[in-house]
Length: 99
Image (cartoon, rainbow, N blue to C red; front, side, top):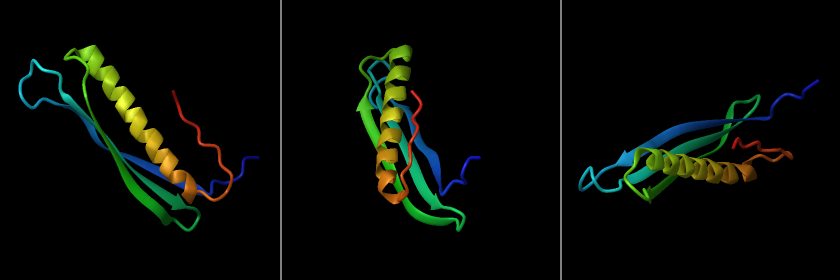
């Protein structure tokens, strides 16, 4: 029998995509952002809420590279958000991250 969850993590994507400032021929700036809320169950009490935003320049202006760079930037933002959530989860927990 699996024990009931003590917390719910709500992750909301707030920013994701390239931004071309000067010219469509130059590498864009990449934005990725998430908002994470830690909710204690069963009371539904919000224990913490915060945002993580990441920005980086794409290495080159090629669709495949931009997509891969965005993926890495988003993964980094989610990892940072999960690390910030750890102090608000008081019981020993295992945070599972997908690769």
